[in-house]
Image (cartoon, rainbow, N blue to C red; front, top):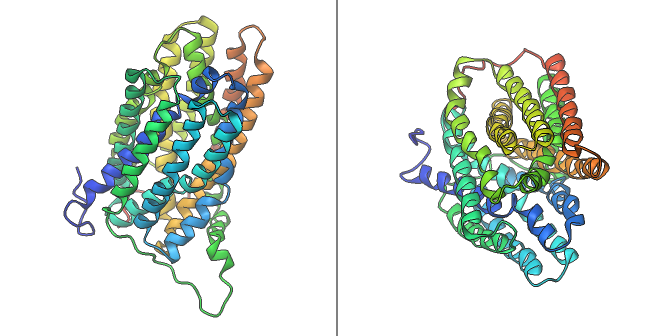
Length: 411
């Protein structure tokens, strides 16, 4: 499974897999449980702001640290250091809830944690893509361990009875420490770019060179679709756990792992799909699954039956994999190695920053607007489904078929 060519030394591939597992297990402990944790603390009002913290700092943090990986520091050492530093702030955020210090202490510590944690996804992806041959086929085989980590974390939370407890976040901080140490064992990924002596390098230091990707029509349409699609996605982890609990699910954190179980299957089939079909249609299928997912959520709100929302959660896995993981491979194909870190960071900024921030606030406004009316979940998810329709139409009509040879692997 991890025969990746000559670039990785003995055991190096396993450390990347372990890294993905731990990287995803940490948020898997607290992210799906957060709505019910805040509700149990009596501060449900802070939910949109709590989910907006990470996206806000992701407006600039991934680009800056992505630039550091391209020009100054080895990527695996950088992400390890960020994780070790951020683990303390993550632990303090949930300790503040445990001690009853209130919402503002929680938000303050989460801002500091998110500042250091936001670049980690793109940096670990950079390490992987820089050290594997045939990324189209083999990157999903590493990324699938992240899905496994999320499933294990979600089931553990419900098994420990932490679906509404700050202990889920405190345990996640411990996982982040282990992840930080594991990063130093990953293959060395030194910077490939060069700063120009005697010239102002402020654009490079801020990671703004990656904005050149918007000049390519194919990339522009993909990046803007990614941004638009991420906005309604913001409601998934914010409100699906609450709907589950309202419908009588006693283990919502475990139920939310259905998406990652399906994601494992999607990861294992993605390389096969990309080798046999056009990348464009993989992306379109993901958009359509996103539409069906919210349609099932709405129908569950109408019928009052859990089976429909469970099916919708399961669709989240292939929807996420076929769009966002395929998108990472697309970006890696179209950029020079010297810009790999910044390009992945730009994608991370659009997903976790601009789109995530807009999604947290707009979905929060939509929820507040529809709450209290008959069949409120139907209207809430229905509005978001219409937003996905708009994303799909924009992508289908604007995406340029003038792609590089999609079946040709990039070494």
